[in-house]
Image (cartoon, rainbow, N blue to C red; front, top):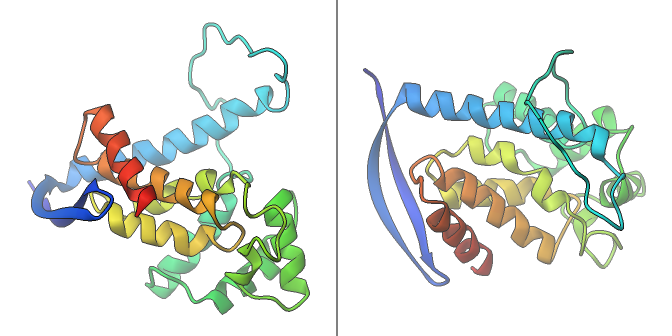
Length: 215
């Protein structure tokens, strides 16, 4: 059996973290990464029929069975991330330069984008570059937009059991369109996902995420 050795930093407090080396079977890591990608697709695509439908009262979903009978595709919750992932793999680079990111947006991210991401796209056409495009002083949506949390999950899957690397990578990309408190949601989500590779206790996973967003 093949094993993956990981040096991981655990968030334990706002100003302290502990490092430890762990050994995880490659098959287990691979299975969790695939599960994370499948979870993204199911959550995004199975949720579309309910989007923008429940305002005054919560919706009621009964008898739900996760399924993708028509196959899977990207939507505005994954297509940003996966554009980056393809280029990251092609260049063998974790953190793409911001001029490369700007070029990717101009060539591939032009339709079906909303709010802060749409405004960031306009700022690119005006000559601004990331992360300026996610600066709340320029982008009026950036300080409260939720894309800080739903455009970051894939980056956590790139850093299994490495929550600090996951958070740093996620912020590098989500700050193209968000800043301020939404950046903390990127830290929260990426840290929880990366921590879940080595921790099953949900309370500890949430605590790790909360500690990361304070740092």
